[in-house]
Amino acid sequence: MIFRRKLYVRMLDWKQRWGGKYALLIKGARRVGKSTLVEEFAKKEYRSYILIDFSKTSKQLEEAFADYTNLNFLFLQLQTIFNVTLFERESVIIFDEVQFNPRARQAIKHLVKDGRYDYIETGSLISIRKNVENILIPSEEMSMVLYPMDLEEFYWATGNDTAPAQIRQVNGMKQAMGNAVHQKWMRELRLYMLVGGMPQAVDAYLSANQLQEVDRVKRQIIELYDTDFNKIDPSGRASKMFKNIPAQLSSNSSRYMIETALGEKKPGNIDTVVYKMGESMVVNLAHHVNDPNVGLGLNSSLNTYKMYMADTGLFITLAFGDKNFTENIIYQQLLSNKLKANLGYVYENLVAQMLQTAGNELYYYTFPTDNGNKNYEIDFLLSRGNKIVPIEVKSSGYKTHKSLDTFCEKFSSRIGERILLYTKDYAQDS
Image (cartoon, rainbow, N blue to C red; front, side, top):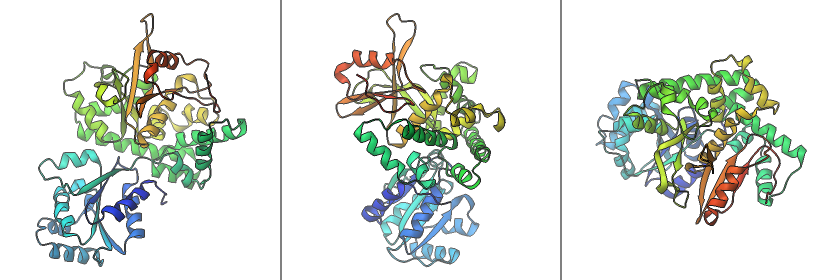
């Protein structure tokens, strides 16, 4: 299926304002729908297009990009190979999986300067960085990120265009909606958590209406990511750290414990491995803030972080990957709203995904309790204006929020809005 994606609107803005001046690079993890989105955009917004998939190009096509000094000849070759007529300022050429042909990416500078056509590239950021070490990166390039489908896009896919607007309206009014409406929205949220936002998984759900088929698709994607991690880190450490994300979050540790995940002392090059994992966009990293103040990035620790999955649907499957689908109790618990307290880290991963997709960098903060025996923790921090916004995530109806209260008392002059996310209806707490 072709799904409606929010990035389409931003791509339209690029075409209208910057087409002919800059190429557009769509970055994102594998299987988030980059190629599908770009081709759909080309079909609707241009008179003609050529899509070059560099992951499976012919020798003839590779030779065409071996020498791009004669652009007239290059365009003639492309039109002949793909049997497509290009029209000046009305056509787009797509470089799909551009990381597999660094010379084609380097040619972007000259192609954009020529000005006859628009250019859109897609690729995995980590592969792009690896394969362009010895080429000149074009400055005539704008980039955008495509994330897994968010909740609103999931609603659109299921044919529900009204719920997102209603939820926004209620949030703006800051009033409770009542038990019936709230329960309905929570059921839909839990379904989104189970299916996730990978287009293939959403397609499987809509086609088969069976979570078992959805789980099968998600397991295939996880295997693909695991293979990718073994390629970027043949030692297998990236793969181990990836698979250990659910265990790390369920342990309620104040940071990702590398030694626990690897079963060895922290290796000297592990920071580079973690950096590459973040670049893959398969995981989201939340860095610890040493001093919670405006300009969170200036006070963050690069070596102290938590690691989340970029898609909560994949997270759920990864957490129970050692069990058959029929034994996957989390599916039953989420659908029936009987999620146990010790599985609340699923909601934490969901909030991390939502914040990242909305364009926020992820930060958190811990500080010792009065007796020093353990730590208080603020799950996420946002910077808004000259204030910071603390966010605490609860998996069920809350009774206390000591961490949030103590934090707001300790840094009262820095606090703007404070947010407690939990599974009950909206309420204001003095």
